[in-house]
Amino acid sequence: MLRFIRICTILIVVCFAVTVQAQSFDAVKSAAKKGVAEAQYDLGWMYYYGVGVAKDYKEAVKWYRLAAKQGHARAQYNLGQMYYEIKGVDNKEALKWFHRAAKQGNMNAQYSLGSMYFYGRGVAENDKEAIKWFRMAAEKGHAAAKHDLGMLYVPGGGRNPEVPTWYRLMAEQGDPVEQEMLEDMQTWTSFTAKFQAQSFDAVKRAAEEGNTEAQFNLGAMYAEGRGVANNAEEAVKWFRKAAEKGYAKAQCNLGYMYITDQDMAKNDTEALKWYRKAAKQGTAEAQHKLGRMYYKGQGAGQDYTEAIKWFRRAAEKGHANAQNNLGVAYAKGFGVAQNDAEAVKWFLMAAEQGHENARNTLRELLAP
Image (tube, rainbow, N blue to C red):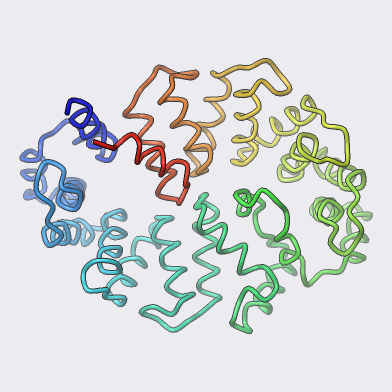
């Protein structure tokens, strides 16, 4: 019973805004009635989950709507979810609120909006719009959006004939898909779509002329064996050319090859070096990978403090794996003081993006 009470307290602390996290249901309701949008959102959340009050979806919708009308993005998203899943499956209302939240940058709403365009729920099917919103969510680190976007980019993955045309336009304009979008797949198998309108020869010519992005692309082609036989040495050669010019994605991929590729000698020190360079430029995937190396003691002595520093930077950019790892660190007291509230906070963020390990951990933590 004591464990149950403690976990409920953690949930309230984690999921509420800092300004109201220590307040009671009555205090939150009082603030909500005065028109405070954050309190209205919190009250809707409490009614939805039955925290401090009996579950009441009708009341949850009422308070979410009041906050949503004031422009509260999370309330708009949650209201959309309720219309989509609970309140009579009203796709048009769901679409409306997802759209408002998505425009404010809410990645969960952006993903949900992309899904509605993809499946034609509440709106006509439109792969171009689906990709647009999936991409926005994926760039913020939304795991499911990364996966779905990757599948759309695979040849034959889209239904709409506009998609290949739109894709070619992006490639011609030098707007490649972010490598981070596919980090959860842990392979480079979706690379083909990224440059499906470009031939190997064209990329190679541009790379040999000194074009930095083409050098990165050529390295990726050699690494994946697309348009040319797989060749790790050539991949490293071209990644290095781009990396030495400060191209962050090339630095990150170079680090990845030094630590994972089976066709070349592993070199943890080199991997650490290149991950650090990319991480310092703000690349979330590199920050996460650098944190993992310090956490495991690869390429340098084990250093939990450094690991946490880089996990946190990636996690704050929305990187789901980093969020989960930060949750683990707080749960176990690795590199930080043990803190259940912080652990649950980061697990929740990762779980919202579909991170399965985070979801499983939360189920265990929140079990009565």
